[in-house]
Length: 632
Ligand code: ADP
Image (cartoon, rainbow, N blue to C red):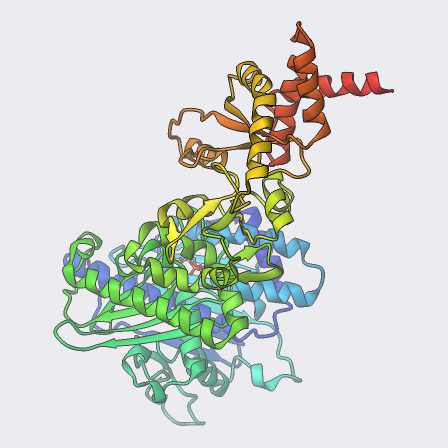
C-alpha cells in the first residue's frame, strides 16, 4: 500500500505552528471542537440518507464514542457519520478555506504578546487543528458513507501530512490524538483520565443531540463494562429557563457559532398554538470579519422536532440581522423541507416577523438597561442594522429607536434621533446631517461652517449605508432629515429688511461673475451662487436636494450600474477676500482669459475641501506651483 506525503498549505502550516506552541490556556476546548465535527458528520449522514434512501450506509445507531488508552497515552473520538473520501481529506483537513482565518493569522502575526495572541485564538476558533494543542501526533481514519475504501491521514503538525488508503476503515471518522507527555503539575487536564473527559463533555457538549459514549475502565480481572452515555442530549431550547444555566447556553452558542467567546445576549422565544416552535437566539459580542462580504453565511440553524435540518437558514431572519446565531425548532414542518419551500411558506414568514420583532425588542431592552452593553452592540452591529432602515419599512421605527449616530454635540458619545430632536434650537425645523468617509474629514468640511458658527448640531454619518437610509427614511417625528451639503441652506430664520436689502445688492454686484463662472465650469457645474453656508472657506460644492451625492454615484458604479455624472452647484463666500478680489477683477477687465484659471482653481479647492479628488491632479499641481512661484 502506498503512502503519499503532502505539504500543508501555508496558512494551515502557520496555524498548526501556533497550536503546537499554543499559549491558549483553555486547552480543554479541543474536545469540544472534535465532538462538534463528529456531531455535524452524524447530522450530515442522517440528512443524506433521508434524501437518498439507496445510500449504502448504516444509520441504525448513529453515535459518538470516546476511547482513552492510558498506557499508549491516546485519546480517540470516533463517529459513524458521513466520513470523508480520500480527496476530501486532503481538501478539508490539509487546507484552510475559511477567509476569516487568513485575517486571523495576519492579526496574530501582529499581536505583540502572549495575552493578545490568546485573545485572538479565542476569537476565531480553529476546529480540528486545536487537537495539536494537546497532541504531538494526530491520526485520522475515515470512510465516506457508501464508499468501499477508507483513508488514513497522519501528521505531527509540522510541515507535512501523509495519506494512505485504509481497507479496514469503518464508516465514519475516528480521530486519534497521541497526547503530549503528562504534566504531573496539571492532573486536572489529564486527558487519559475518564473523569476529566466526563467533566469536559458535560461542560461543553452536553446538548449535542447524538449520544456521546465512553467505555469506563475495567477493574482488574473483570470483563469490559457497558459503554456509558456522557451527555444528556437535551435540547436547551426545549427546556424551561430555570433548568438551564447561562454557561450551558453559552456553550451551545460556541458550538453553533464557532466563536470561542461569550455571546452578548441570549434570546429565548417559545411560540405555542397552531404553529408551534422554540427559538434560542444569540447576539454575539463581536462582529465576524466577513460580516460585510457577499458569501457571509447568514441565518440560524433549523431543527424540526429536535432533529437538525439545516445550517444558515436564511428564511428565518432578514439579512440585516444576519449576525444573529442560534437555533429554531419547529414542530409542524416536514423533515424533508427545502430552502425553496421555506422561502415561500406562510408560517415561516410569520415566524420571521415574530423573531425579528423579538430581536429588536431585546436590543431596545439592552439599550434601556445597560449603556455599556448597548454601546458594544451598536459598535459591532449598528452598520448592519441600519440596512434594515432601507429594507424593512415595517420595523423602521423600532430600528430608529435603537439606532445612534456620531454627532457634533459630543466627541465620543453618539446620539439617538430622539435626543437630537430634544436639543433642537428654537426655529430649527430640520434634522441636519453630513455624510462622508471619516469623522475628521466631514467635521472640517466647509459645509459645516455656518452650522458650527451658529451652534447647530449636525449628525456625522460615515457608513456607506448612511447615504441610502437617510433618503429612504426621509423624516423623523415630522422633522426632515437634511444634508448640510444639499440644497439651499438658510439658517438665519427671520429676515430683517436691512439684511434682505444688502443681500439683493450683493446679488446684483456678483451677477456677472456668477454667470461667467458657470460657463467656464460647465463640464462639472450647473449653477454658481452665493453661499449662506460659508464663513471661512472661499467656496464649496453642494448637490441639489434630490441629486445623487458623489459617494452614492461611486457606490452604484462599484456595483456595476451605469449612472450619469451629476453636475453640482458651486457656492461662493462673498465675505472672502479671494472671492471679492475675483469679482473686482472680473468687473474691471475687458479680457477675462487670465481669470479662467482662477475660476478653475477655486472650484478644485472646493472639491478638495469636502474630501474629493481633483479631476486632473497634475494640472492642479501645475497651476498652484505657477502661482506660488509668482508670489516669491
Ligand atoms: P470547521 O469544522 O470549522 O469547518 P475543521 O478544521 O474542524 O473546521 O474541519 C474542516 C472540515 O473537515 C469540516 O468542515 C468537515 O467538512 C471535515 N471534517 C472534520 N471532522 C470531520 C468528521 N468527524 N467527519 C466528517 N468530516 C469532518
